[in-house]
Length: 344
Image (cartoon, one colour):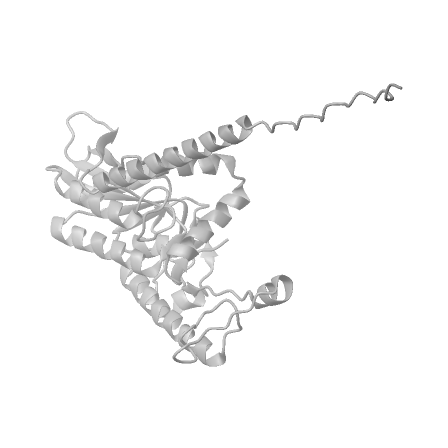
């Protein structure tokens, strides 16, 4: 008797091999991006290091025949902070521009082009000191031409000038000092569940901490710093505007402004600027102060760095609110807490 036929055994299904090419591609992309970033950092560092040796390209803005002298137009633009920012270090670049200007054989004056909401009080003071020393050394007039914004630290730096020209709608003044602190205690503890347990040598060692409320004693100490800096700011404005403007500027008149902003018309009425007008008016006044009728106006263009290009591309992609948040985030993460800054 023959054994019964067994049904044919089906072969076991082969395990599907996972495709590895997506992972290979991802690895190549990661390595490629990392390599590009590394090259960018190296190139940027090299360019920034080279910037310290570069004087900038001499560019003629207004060229006239048979000039009797040269005016150098120097920008004070963006947040004033003594650190490398998108657009370079404004304190360092001002010093380089002044150094270059001092080498101009026919130098007759400086146009300070101000378009800044202010920034760090120390950085603003360094720039003011550099401008005053340059004017004393070279005996040339300085005229400030205010563009859209010349507030707080932007106004502080303008106190080096012999004359200030602002547009009717320039935002200026904001003569005041601010020290910003934040309290994230509720957010971190109740929403995220994170608490902080610092071990400190004294109660005020973590003054300004974001994870707890400020104590009255801490607030009084910080207020003393703010008041001291504000008193110095008021003194600088009174000295800088002495004998100028349509209205005498006094300590009482500056304090009465309560650190608020003014447009150009309001600033002129308060004696904080000398003239309402445009760039051409600033140049005309500088010619009058220098005692000449013709002059070339030049500027020194700062060389672009790799990081300038990166930040420019990012700013193109950002909406205005994101750009503003990024600016403030940079300022508060890298900059000083004591600010002469107009905040919108």
